[in-house]
Image (cartoon, rainbow, N blue to C red):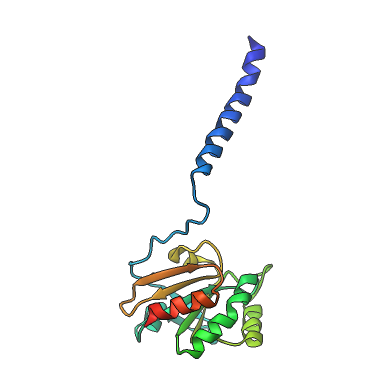
Length: 176
């Protein structure tokens, strides 16, 4: 009887593994949360990366639609998307950059400024999200992520991953 009792934890472990395995087979790994689309963007005040002064994100969006781009100096895909952000800026698109968790040991505000200095500055404003709170409020799952904010301050669209040329065209069209 005691020998059978020693097998109970193993049977429970196998049952749990099967349950989680079967559950994950029915899930789409490409699903990207889009719950904030159609909602007002979070009302955030973040430090400006240039002068350290608090800037309210809603004030930056009051003059018309913008892109809000979460990036970091330690993020490889952020560097890949950078030419597309520069191209959007050249088309007159206003982009607010939010430097996400650029803190030691992975990065630093100085590293973020150096990255922008070397690759070009596509941002009309650069804000710091050192503790990641803005990322949580926007519901990001990582960087880079880009949000289209409409004239009314509502989130129109969310792009997860690096912005590539076709993505840049689609995002620019949504801002018109």
